[in-house]
Every structure is written in C-alpha cells, then in structure tokens.
Length: 605
Image (tube, rainbow, N blue to C red):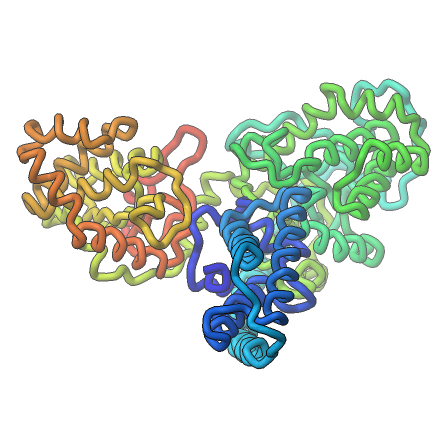
C-alpha cells in the first residue's frame, strides 16, 4: 500500500497534504540513498516469505539473523518517528509486523541449521522485486517532473504577462528608499516597541483581505523588477531546499527584493493545522526570527533566518543560547522578547494572511504577486526569476502585488482540475432530476461531519429552483472493519451506518435507500442497532429484516467495491467531491460553503 501510494496509484486515507504520512514521505528518512524505504520494506517481506517457504516453514540461522536486524531497524525508525514527529500509521503497522515476526521467531520457532539456500533464494527475489520497481519509479518521477514543469510554465507565463501589463500601465510609484540589500547596522534597542522604520510592517490580516503582499524585513530595494514573498516554515524540508536556491539568487540578482512570511505547520500557533503538530519547534523558530528583526532590523532578521535554516529550524535551549552569543545578542533580552506578545502577534498576522490567501502547505512562493506553482521542478525559482528579468519587467514596489484571495484560489484550483470519468458503479445511488444541468458525485462517510454538510446542500439542488443537480452518493466508511481500502478506524459506527444504507436499498430499492440516507445523515452521533430498530417503523421497514440484510455478504461487498473504486481515483480524504467530473480540492472557507457557487458556475458552462 505504501509503494502504491508512493507511485500515486493509491491514496491512503489520512495521508493527504499536511499529514504525518506526507511529512514522513518528504523527510530525509524516507530514502536510503536513492531507494525509497517503502521499496526496501516490500522487497524484505517478499524475500522473507520466499525464504520461509523454501525452508519448509522454519527460519534458517542466516534468516533468523536477518529478522533480528530488521526488527532492530524498525525500532530505530519508530524512535526517529517519535523524535521527529513523523507519525504514519501505515509505517507503524509495517514496523510492528517486523517486531512481531522477531518475537514469534525468538519465542519458539526452531532454527533449521546453517543452510543459506533459502536466504539466497529470498535475496534473489528481493533483488528482482527492486529491479521491477526501479523502472516504475523512473516513470513516476518523469510524470511528476512533467506535471511540475507544466505548472511552472503556466506560472511563469502569468508572471511575464503581469509584468508586461504593469509596464504598459506605468503606475505612479512612491519615491524609492535606500536598499536593504546591504543593510547598515542599526542600533541595538533593548526594549523595542515596533519594527524598525526600514521594515515593511503589515497590519494584522483579516480573512479575504485584499492588500499588497510584502514582508516586514525586506531584502533589496523598495522598487525591484522581481519581488519574491515566501510563506515558509523553518522545519519544512522543502522550504530548506528552496531556501538554498533563494540565497543564491539574493547574491546574484541586482533588482530583486525578498520578503518572508511565517506559516508554521504546528497547531501551537497555526489554527489551520487543527490537531496536527508536524513541526513542533516551527512556532518558536518563527518567533526567534521576528525577535532578531525587532532588535536589529532587516540585517538581524536575515542573519537569524539563515541561522535557523542551517539548523533546519530545530534547537534546544542550550543551542539557542550558544547561537545568540555567537550572533551578539543578550540572551535574557532576546528570550524575553521572543516569548512576549509582540512576536506572537507577528506570527499570527502572517498565519492569518496566509489563510486569507488559501495557503495550506509550505513553501508557498509569490513572484510579483503571482503564485509560483511547480516550485519543485529543478531550479524552478531560478528559472522563473530569469524569465521575469528577461521580460523587461519595470521596477515596482510591493504595492503592485495583490495575489488572489482564498476564495479565488479555491475556485481556480477546481477549474484547473482535469475531467475524470466516473466509474459506472458510482451511479448506484443517484437522484437524477430529468432537467439536471450539473452532475455531482460525493464519496463520503455517514459518520463524517463534512460529508453531512456537503450532502445537505447538494440535496437542495436536486429539487427546488434551478440549476438542478444529478447527485450520486458513494460509500467510503473510514473503518477498516468494513472498508478493506483503509487501515484506519476513525468512525466507530461508520460500518453499521453504511451497511444500513445498503440493506435499505436491498429491501426497498432507491426510495428506501434515500430515506435511510436522510436518517443516517441527521443522526450521525446515534447510529446503533437499537436506534436503527427504533427508526425502522417511521422509515417503512421491518427491524428484523433490516438487521438480516445488514449481515449479508453482498451488503459488505457493495461497500468494499465502492471504496475500491474510490481508491482507484486517488481517494485521500473524506469527503471527496466531483462537479462535472472535476474534483473539488477544497470547498469550505471559514463558515462559507462554496459548493453552491461552484454548481451555479458549472451550470452556466
């Protein structure tokens, strides 16, 4: 499953953007050399099975040694996961299996001697497994690279078009101030109350605020041909890679200004992270950078910025103390400001601004107000900057850079999705008004709140005023007890709810299915066999008949087949929604449900 997820052939629930699984996959521990750890794990287990069969059910002495080594490696990886906060439930299952095999081996399975033939055979199969995976990996990388290049080309085209438009319009710009590319050393204020005058202090962001994008501690001239603003996280591996490229550009590009915004992937200071704390020290790292800026202005900020990235955003109290001494700060003063309200407010301001722009990952880079997509292509940032410079972009201040709001971003992300052909089985549970202009598919879980929120709105569009929607509901309970396509048990009553809906259709067709569907959506916190039995009379069915139908194998198979078809489309979160075949990546913005507006737009095309 992890190998399939790596190739994009299977999206594991709970492993989407911002998850512990995604962080683990992007970490330095995800590969040994150039080989993904998932590949090695698959090859190891295949070799182990082959070796065990060849030795007729018992481990040879060499194989026993390998099992011990594998268990030790798994324990090391569990320790790494704990230390780096890289929790991936699927990875933990794999490591648990390794340890369990070791325990079973040491607890009673006798060695068969020193014969190495089974182990050699297993090793050969493992090499064959890796030989098969290698070309698939090359193809996957090629496809990923092609997608990144396509996104980069589109982003660069927008940047050069905007540069041409701004050059033609020739807006009136404020008088340029002294460049901070080579800043002078300001006085070291012990108790600052505001950012230095040479910084660009931004007011606290409000949702959907439309205002220019700029950093507080600008590097470079106020008016520049290329203006980069990056939302970053000092513990983010991808941010570190981009930072290396950015540092080189800052040394080699004359008409370049750079601003940094904080977007730590930690719920300690970023409400968008919910219960996730992917980078536990990221909030303190952002506060440290802000403190340096408050004390020494842009020069201090950039000095601390580079120090933090050199440490990947992690530091102990002792390491911070040593760093402060090296950089010439009084530790007591620095830590007092770092833990104070002013730095917390600055980080919150950036996080709020990021949320108003629809940011949900890092790095997110803007060049002259245009988001740089495809930043993971080789030298993407350098190439984009070169294209903007070559376009003859006129120097301008950040006041010219107003990126799309979160609402606009959500719509654009949906519009840019490819049209996906829906599997025939997705039409099993469908309400289809004769004059439906829009087709919507919802893949959901009866126990998941967002599923109910989306369903309630979509059902309104199957009746009442136009536009009308052809609405299909597809089962994906997040519970491995009835959904073999997941290893999670997020919603305890999800299986009973899904079985009840399928059983209702068996008993009374579409009409009874949708009656049960409505009841399940409105009773998310109370689905039990007892409550279902109580509801049966008002729903128009016999409780005993429902219970019997819920226990039938074909009911379980229908749920499993729905889930399998959803996984084939890349299911990675619940609910998953398609409007006219285009996936809706995100549809909830603060308290606004955007599905209605998307349906209205789809109906006009």
